[in-house]
Length: 79
Image (cartoon, rainbow, N blue to C red; front, top):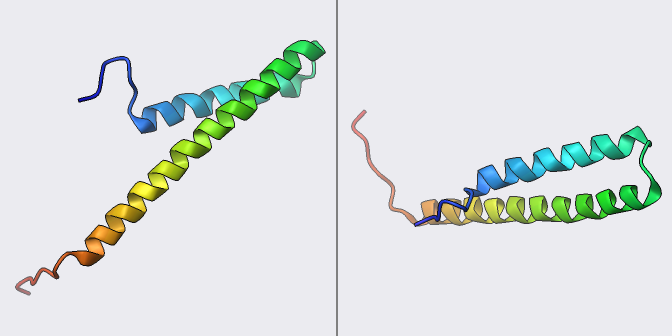
């Protein structure tokens, strides 16, 4: 069972992606001091990696489900 402080993978991805968009918008303004821009860039790289891990995990789940569906016996239907 999922704890209340945990997010579903889709929710976590959406939150991370939103944060990544915010970071990009801030960096694109060009009005930040160098230290702050570097810190935001580092956060953006880490956030992008976290998003990619979630996407890779989702793709693996889909592949696993598809492989499992290929192994199920065909269901006959009355047409």
